[in-house]
Image 1 (cartoon, rainbow, N blue to C red):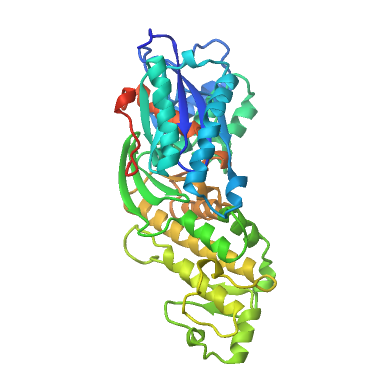
Image 2 (image 1 turned 90 degrees about the horizontal axis):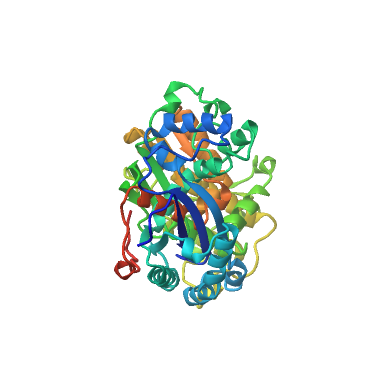
Amino acid sequence: MKKQKDKIYILGIETSCDETAAAVLQTRCQSTRLGRGWPSRGRTNAHTNLRMSLRGRLGDRSNLLHNFRLKSNIVASSLDLHKKTLGIVPEVAARKQAELLMPVIDKALKKAKLGLPDLDAIAVTIGPGLVGSLLVGVETAKTIAYLLGIPVIPINHIEGHILANFLSLVIARSKATKQSHRGIAAVACGDLAMTRCDEDSSEVNGNAPRRWRRSIFPAVVLTVSGGHTSLILMNDFGKYELLGETIDDAAGEAFDKVAKLLGLGYPGGPAISAAAEKVNRKQETGNRTYANDGNDPPWVNGNAPRRWRRSLRNCSVYKLPRPMLDSGDFNFSFSGIKTSVLYLVRFLQTATPTLSPPPKADRLVRGRLRGGQAAAIAKEFQQAMVDVLVSKTVSAAQKYRAKSVFLSGGVAANKALRNEMRKMINKKLPETYFSVPDFEFCTDNSAMIALAGAIKFNLKKGLKNWYDVSVDLNSRV
């Protein structure tokens, strides 16, 4: 092991799916008393007030986050590559990551003004994810750790997404000595903020109402992405309890497949969101509604009146089911709503609707939808997904008396979900904190992995020798 020094540098590596990312995060050595923080030289009033605010919300844990600085965060996207196939091909993604990872690491180190010998630990995602992609990151991390004689910190991908909610505090601290008081307020009170700063910026000045400054734990976390949809109870850093998860498809996967059915392209989340925003709400008034309450509508057997079918094809408002909305638990299911969209699209595109499957999978959609039909369906699908996700999250927060609600994962970048979640929490849980990462930290990134590693490093948990680390596809928080 290296000789102990004042500043510790942790490299974070993320390659769980299609992105290739590396980040460098700086912390203090373990011998430094927790909470001592950085030298006071050059501190601003803004930083002092921000730290007071953090203490009010996190208690002693505020000192833990106070010691971190994000030095770099580099993400190489292969989105254009996967657009060609309207989805991720695991082998193609892994080969591209093997090509990009070392240049991305070099760029992250260069931006942080460091070299490989300056690193003290490597945090790497070990799962869940695509096995080929995970192997690229894990084996690279193990090789570097072996050459430098430093520990590896294995990180669960879901935990990384959860902790992305705390990156705002790290970024605010990183900019504290360079920003004015007003600038710090802007950093701490954006979408990244983990408080009610969107309504009252007094939290930054340390003058927030006492009820807003209580501990943030326990927190209910909704993690929703292309591969995962789960509700988690977070009692402290590293202490998690699974409340519910999807029993079939993840929410992000449903977005991608529905977007493909509607011919909106890839990735499905942004495509459906953009299409939904184009729907003119004024045109919805007075239009006919397609209702699917779980019973087969008349068109299933192709016997619907011709006039009824024609009016359905011309309408711009449709009603899709809200799966498991009243199931009484916190599990999710999104395969049924995809099927509802498939049947509706097939009906709108064919003269004689039928439930029999098409001869080829690539012929699920035949022809194009008329006018604004695709946008109208996209809008209703998005609203159905949001209704289920928000309702279950708020119910879980009420049941477990959560002091905070966190939203994380790639689908957390959906504006409709963010706005509706904030609205319902403000309405039904007015004294509960709501946190959602900035858009760039919702999708896969290495900053969240580096932060998770830094927390484990300072808590002296999870540090392993390179030969004890391996990919774990069933890794759970």
